Length: 298
Image 1 (cartoon, one colour):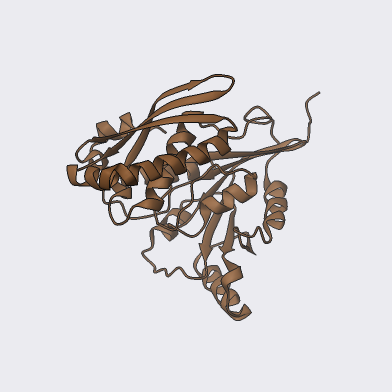
Image 2 (cartoon, rainbow, N blue to C red):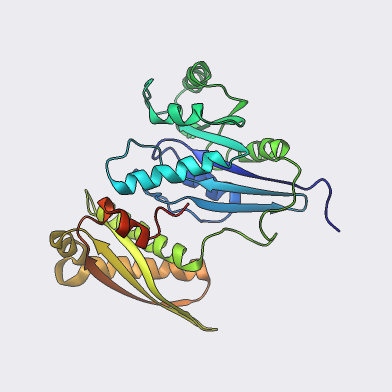
């Protein structure tokens, strides 16, 4: 029998790059769905993380960090942010103790478009030297934006995330679930495989190489005991391909070993991974190529 008081809704997690949005969603959902590195702009897509309870379903949207676009890729990333605001029942605006803002900040512009309750989430409070630093940051934001409530958290240590969850559930509308109650996300397995490999690239290479790289899973064959997958890693220049491969193939071998280990943890199954590096000039600036890589799909 359907629960007449069942609550369901979409909650958009937005903010500038590197404030902890992906860490927060993973903490709220209880699964590692979004990749996390110390580099900005790691998240490129809108990723649903679905949290189910007996009488609720919350569909969190982890979105790319808000930036002023320089490439077609950036424009696509910001479209993911805009679409998440359009269908949101609530917005979690995530900031931290260290971010600096100004009146022309893109984050403020996005928030002004929100027509639903905004919860100010101040992250990384575990790094505060004194309580007054936290209070000053909260007061600053309250003077800039209209918020329903504020919550101070540490997403990394899950401090006050239960309080955040209770508030979100309370604000969700009465509605049947949007997804099956056993669903964890809307993304296919290939997507998470490509994201895990892309994370290892971000962790193992410096400067422009990670930002110029995209990963596509071209083969994904699963049996009862093993998953065999082929990953094509695209970069923009031949010089980047040389860097990705490394001396006698050492660098890409390291990425492959680290990726396979995490893929096996994620899928709970043995993984055989083949990686191939290809050069596709200026894919970040080409709308047609971006569509082929799964961007511009809203």
